[in-house]
Image 1 (cartoon, helix red, strand yellow):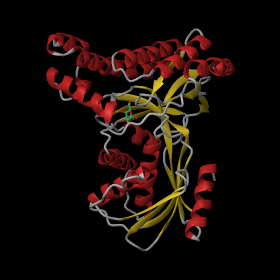
Image 2 (image 1 turned 90 degrees about the horizontal axis):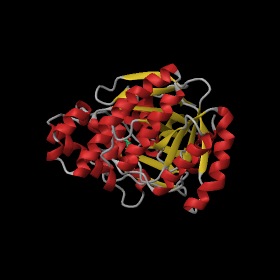
Image 3 (image 1 turned 120 degrees about the horizontal axis):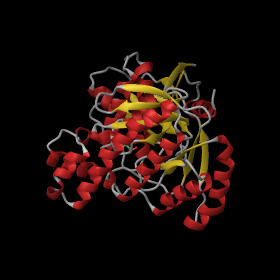
Amino acid sequence: MTDVKTKAAAAFEEKFGAKPEMMSYSPGRVNIIGEHTDYNDGFVMPCAIKFGTAIAARKNGTDRMRVLAVDVNGEYDEFPVTADMDKHESKTWSNYLRGVTKLICERGCKFEGLDVAIAGDVPLGAGLSSSASLEVAFGNLISQAYGLGIELQDIALIGQAAEAFIGCKCGIMDQTISACGKKGCVMRLDCRTLDKQHVKVPEGLEILIVNSNVKHALVGGEYNERRAQCEKAAAVLGVKALRDATMEMLDAKKSELDDVTYRRARHVITEDDRVLAAVKAFESGDLAKLAQLMYASHCSMRDDFEITIPEIDGLVEIIRKAIGENAAVRMTGGGFGGSVVALVEPSKVEKVKAAIDAEYEKLSGRKATIIETYAADGANFSLL
Ligand code: GLA
């Protein structure tokens, strides 16, 4: 068993005084390119990472979920298996579980309670989808434990709906890659049709994630505001979603849009094009093209979508300088903190690390965390 699985199993035994009967696991993700395009029915290109959430569990023969969060100071919560679910006022981690339980009940599925212990190693607030990995691991656990036969893509949709229950109107990217990722591959996901294509990570490129350690929180606020601005732009352009718009269509309506809404839409429309171009660059192993696309994506998030912060912009420039030519790097995830992702030739990894160590603290007053990952598989479940 991996570390987090062992940790979850040990905590389970300690709390519930019996061995767990099953283990559910689902990874976090890093998005290589395609930010804030998912809820615009567009394209994204994420991969699952080597960190995730493990849930050790056992049926408890009651109609209540009894849940222990090992990494949230060993906090404990209990709630009934019902569609008529309340949110917990302070244990926000439990609301993801409450949301998933509620949503599965709403599908008309019949199931009972579980005792569960949860352990994870996705850093929280790092833009690496710790919450999606929790939702998918828990949803898949309920489905598998009670033979509900819910497909992984549907588990992902349940996780997305659980986020809305909590207050974040997020897209479908994070839960889908957490559920359906494939080792060694990024996923080209069409967020309208949910069509997936697994594209191999080119040989000789390492995926490096640098956590700025400025925590982001997506619930409500800025995220939902961006989504509303995109929907407003789509309405003015007369399209279902910005996925259906082109730059020509946007420019033709420029006089009817305020500057902010125009720039939000420009980010999404150009970002969709960059994702499709990046898929081709992945297929042909064209690092120079990837570098160009990823930096253009970063600048668009910084200037048009306005979701980067100075610490993140600084990190991107430190890494660009260290890599020199063909620096494929950008902010990843929802924004307002979190992490930067880079595709780096192995010979340059040490140089990048040294540059971050030497320069990031001066700029931000804090240390960055560097994670070397591979593209991992999505969710798995096993009986113990
Ligand atoms: C968060 C959301 C996703 C997506 C990204 C931005 O991770 O959960 O649905 O919108 O932000 O690309």
